[in-house]
Length: 107
Figure 1 (tube, one colour):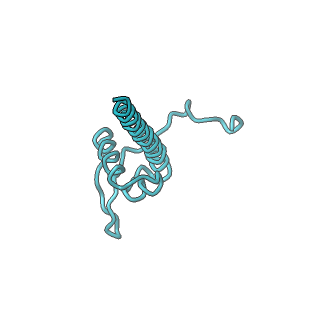
Figure 2 (cartoon, rainbow, N blue to C red):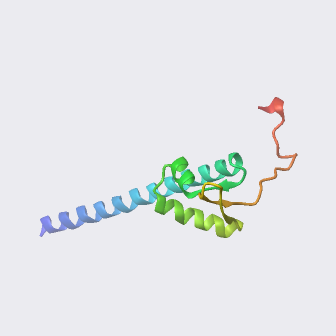
Figure 3 (cartoon, rainbow, N blue to C red):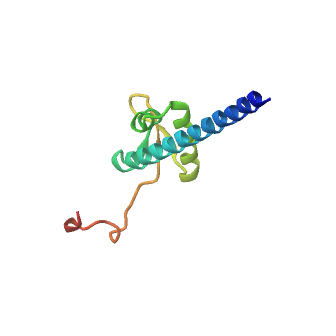
């Protein structure tokens, strides 16, 4: 009976550990996607492609697609095709308020 209890306890511990690791991994992926997304908005003139975001964030394409679809819905981006036939989303332009811009001497 004691052995059975230890097996059940060990199984529960493994299950809880697995859930915690997955949750931590998911959180880290989301953080990388958010950083990469806002970086690309700033550096790529508000144009973001799925493959570029996945590469920049180093996240699986399926997870990246779910994230990008959510951002498209929230920000109202438009799907466009460039001269090479590659697709990307054009998000509204970023316009920073002059008050929010850091002064050169503050860098």
